[in-house]
Amino acid sequence: MNKNTYTTVKLAKGEMNVYDFGGVKLHAFKTNDFIDDEVFVVEKNGKAVIIESPCFYDNISELTEYLKDLQVEGMLVAYHGAGATFLPDVAKYATQNAVEFSENGGGKDLINNFTCAFGEIFDPSVHKITNVIEPGKVTIGGIDFVIKQTADAFDVEIPEINAVYTHMLGHDCHSIVAGAGHADAIIAELRSYIEKNYDLILTSHYTPEDLKDAQTKIDYLENLKKIAADCTDAEGFKAEVQKQYPEYSGGNYLDMTAGFFFA
Image (cartoon, rainbow, N blue to C red; front, side, top):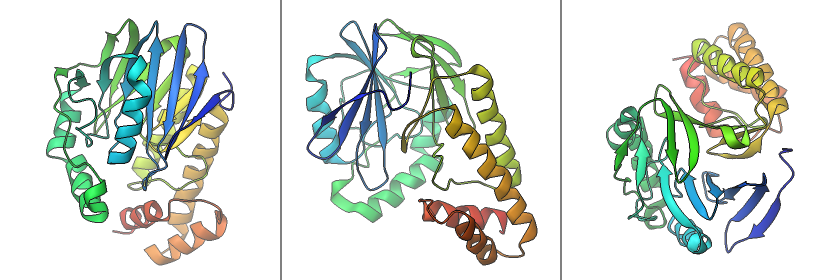
């Protein structure tokens, strides 16, 4: 499946890009919100499973309306625990560490920050998990998913469409990289995607990407380590990264990365 082979449904604020795999459809919801959220809906035989949740009220309303003709069987809540007014009666699935991430950990800190930044348009309520799941295969609505636990939450493999969901990739934007060791961990994960030959890589903050994008990100991360090794402070590091990647978005992520490399 080519990442650009989809049909687009325009919504009031966001848009839905629909990939048709035959027996299964992937609906990629581009929210166009302030933090570039993406939400994914996997559909099979009229039933749907949602990966992540929108967290701004206007997106919650339009996605709820979009889903009215589908039978939503469950929602996988990994890295984005906010937005609990979205489909409150649907079963919610997460690993125990993802529950802790959203309720008490780094995810909760982000929710608090977003609440302060965006005010009443942001839904800070946290989804209540009804089904705590373990790593490995889980079947929801007749669709198989493979859960891989990560440091904060979990990634999701979708074998029927040869795709994987993770928190971040973004081949032409900066990412939060917590030092050289973290960069190496991301590189190892991306190389595993290439080895598994996934058709699509789905992430929380970018449209679906492919293996060429994964390689682009690997090259960026390797270079990021080299730049850091040649710099003496955060400002010099940021300036050099911006010089070499002038078109990249995500300047706030670069600020955080600089803080990690030069704590």
